[in-house]
Image (cartoon, rainbow, N blue to C red; front, side, top):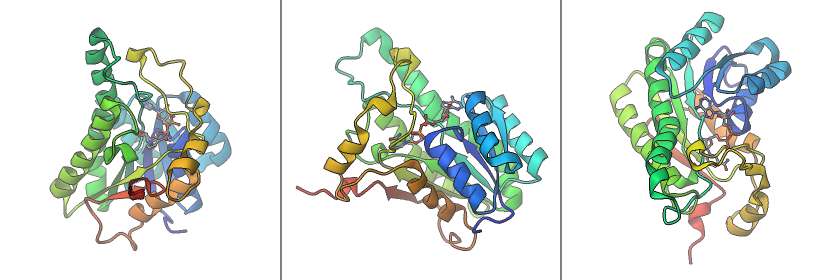
Length: 261
Ligand code: NAD
């Protein structure tokens, strides 16, 4: 029970990594608010976890929705200790070379609005409550925050931006709020969505041979699934174990950068 009596808010908590974080936080004694654009996914998680969890349906690109998620969380559970920015979309590694000129501007805006602006607005909405509890922010980055080949130019740019955002927030919010990130590698079993602006609505992440690719490419020679990544978030949210840490981003990716030549 590393998070007993703590309260967290997880964006994108209805699926994949976010859902695994929600489940693990509840196991560790926390109560959790899920903020996700899919009411159906929220309902599925609540069916399993009951009143330890509340759900707020909304879009991370909207300031009003972010504020509503924070206020519903505090109304239900009395406080907020950890804000986890996690909702994201992918570009299905769409090459810039083959992206139509006409589509590029809208694709850039959609990708940055969800993956970067969503984190910034969520942080702004959560900040007053986190000042009160001397709490934590944790953001999901990616192997694409450090290395090429984990997405296209747009996705990779957003995840690099997240690292800079984490460092500047850690600098600005100290000594009140700690800000850290987790950079997971491939997440088998996720539903990571594509960009509407690139007509990727029909793309299914689960159709990718991700498990096989991870086994072939990673120094640790195996695939990893969402629950195996969730412990890193517990560590960063744990007040006893993460007293000194702020501004850090944990490479948690099967050793993807350790391949050598
Ligand atoms: P997922 O699609 O399974 O879960 C993301 C959730 O976010 C979904 O429930 C979706 O409804 C929600 N969401 C998306 N856009 C939203 C919006 N505008 N407003 C509110 N909710 C929104 O994906 P996942 O694989 O669990 O991805 C979670 C995070 O992990 C993302 O930031 C992603 O970039 C990162 N990541 C994923 C992988 C991978 O292999 N899947 C690898 C590294 C990093």
